[in-house]
Amino acid sequence: MLKGKKPEPQEKRLKIFIYGPAGVGKTIASLQFPNAYVIDCEKGTDHYTETICKANSAVLQTLLPGEVKAEIRELIVTKHPYKTLIIDPITQVYNAIQEEWRNKYGIQAKKEGKNELEDYGMGIWGKIKKDYKAIQRMLLTIDMNVIITAHQKDVYGNNFSKLGTTFDSAKGDDYFFDLIFQIVKKGDKRMAITIKERAEIGKNKFPETFEWSYENFTKYYGKEIIEKESTPVEMADKNTVGRVKNMVNLLRLDDGIVDKWFQKAEVDAWDDMPKVTIEKCEKYLNALLSKAQGGQDTLKTATEGTEQPKKGGKIAKTKDTAKGAQ
Image (cartoon, rainbow, N blue to C red; front, side, top):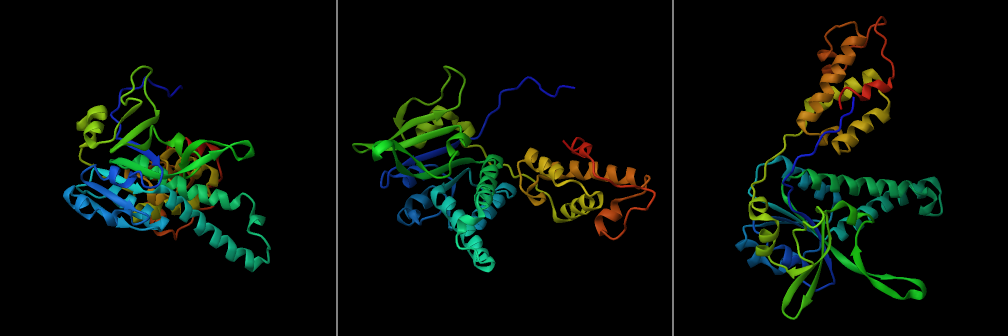
């Protein structure tokens, strides 16, 4: 049976990526959005205390990727007064993730007597990409406006001839966001150049160039959407996660099956799943266990992880198990 259906119009939160040269004012431009929660990765907010307090915003200064991810998760699940999440700049977060994994692999290289970190090949880059993608997926999930800033860098061609400029962050960031703006100064005005906007043909919301201001964003994108209250998402609790993990072990599911579930839920771990999603997985896994064990009650088995399937109820790997929880 085909699963496709006719799409319906959706009001999407404003989620934008901006970049520009040093000193152009990316931080102060972002801070024009009121009720913002700012994850400051290079202490740029130190100069704008009055602006931040007047806008009823809050700041967390950190460069630790784990703390950045944990704070975003808390914003996802907690009821709070903030409407816009600002990460300033994402360049530093991406660099910090790279440094963390280089340090880990460097220590491992010394233990194994390897001469070069590169001996690990693409493995290290897979870890870096996974950690960064986890943060990106959370930015899609969060019910807030999102403003991500990045440094700007030059692009060079043959013979080191300068071709232009672009953002300085992870490769592919331009695919992730629907809206990308380059910030430039023209006289005493801060202007936004629309680099990318996903929209129906002929129905772009933003002009090619406009003066950066909160008022213009509410005008072009919609004040009602931008000033909408954040709605928390109920996430998986520890007890449910424990039961699901035990059932996965009892059923000896292929790792590929669980990976497919994670991909569909856009998470990297059971703990990051919304409650409604993990409950569907639990219901399906419980049905599989009950069938394999001849219909006996499996909830206690899954919770305690002490009882094992009887010999009469064979539990085997199966590719079909990926279907029921989707």
